[in-house]
Amino acid sequence: MKNIHIKDILTSIEGKLITGDDNIVCKQFSKDTRTITKGDIYIGIKGENFDGNMFWKKALDNGAMGVIVQDIEFDEKDIETYQDKVIIKVEDTLQALYKLASYKRDLYHVPVIAITGSVGKTSTKDLVANVVAQKYKICKTVGNNNNNIGMPFTILNAPNDIEAFVLEMGMNHFGEIDLLSKIAKPTICIITNIGTSHIGNLGSRENILKAKLEILNGANNPYIVINNDNDLLHKWYEENKEKMNIKTYGIYEKSDIQAKDIQLHEESSEYNINLNNQEETIKVPIGGEHFVLNSLCAIAVGKILEIKNEKIKEGIETFSLTKNRMEVIEVKNGMKLINDAYNSSVESVKASLAYMSHMKANRRIAVLGDILETGEFALALHKEIGKIVCENQVDILICSGENAKYIVESAKENGFYEKHIYYFENKNDIIKLLEDIMQAEDIVLFKASNGMRFFDIAEEIKLKFQK
Image (cartoon, rainbow, N blue to C red; front, side, top):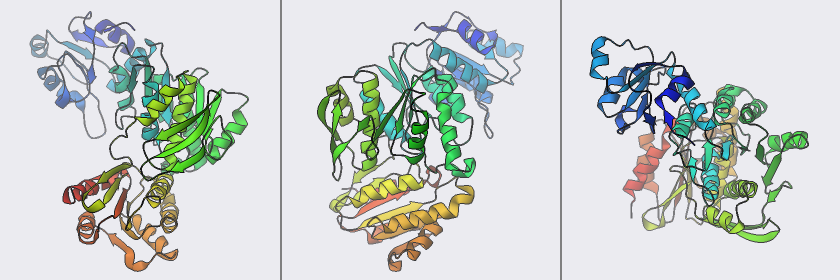
């Protein structure tokens, strides 16, 4: 792709150049004055509670080459002081960000793999990216930068010589993935599953499916990769398989990419698969059936991109997880902590508990908090978790959160031993309890929505029980 100059920015975002040379080449973009590096273009983002435009001077003083701002009036002193810098004024910096990211995306003629789903987006992204990286130089979403700001910046800061994008797309409401898809224009669209995340905002799983299918809106005849074991995606596949280029993966439903002879181990799994007319054994370095599914998705993408079998296998066997997602931490006396506290839903709690139930342990302790954005469904969904707890060999249940009390209530109703159930208003009380009761060979799972910050509890316990 060609370099982006200031004049290209001005054209793509309909901006007004206040000061600066429009022939300057732009390499990196930033929205945070604390992490500005020399030569960056700073984009002031205005949110509900924070206006990044107010920090344009700080950005320039910290080394930014230029700024893109809105709602700022520049006097003669400003123009004189920063005459060697680039200042661009626009009506709306957020819209400018979208237009600029879309412009840069159009400069690349490479595979763009977009991933969405109710759960498993980030771990699937990591696996897919590691497989794709065996053949291409990639740019992938880092951490949880999967929203209307993070994803455009991912594209903007991609090196000129990248050969594929792997982009995660998150959402809470209708229209959000539509926006991301129209910026990214994916060539391969992945939907990992349709669950209950954000059901409080969207009203039904069927509406969640509609919102996830917005991933197709910016694509032009893409490959579509779906989890065929998910009931709603399977139904959608059956209705659309003759009209679209859909590739399926699964364990239980007959699929294009299907695992057989699965062996689930404590910290890994392996299975056999027919891959390009060859029988292959795939080894996944993380335990849990859901990671088998994630690896099948990565294989489907590898096949689409004609990556060799041995490279697909290498990509799966060497991948590592993003922090706070099914992170197994060994501490003293054989105790293990499972930090899976980045997000939560009924489906992901079920997967995490099933994973823990396959691990050898003295006792299995589940520390569970609220699933957020459940709205009118909060009671039913948290009660469902209480039932799932009783089905998964949990020895001690510890809960905290406004809706987590329904988990406790349901666990009691379904026969969980009441003396082994604890409910706290204060998360510090969880730390104190775990300090008192944890024994050698215990396993503790931490699971809640990100806003509950249960990963802080996991970190505190890790520090207290370090080897």
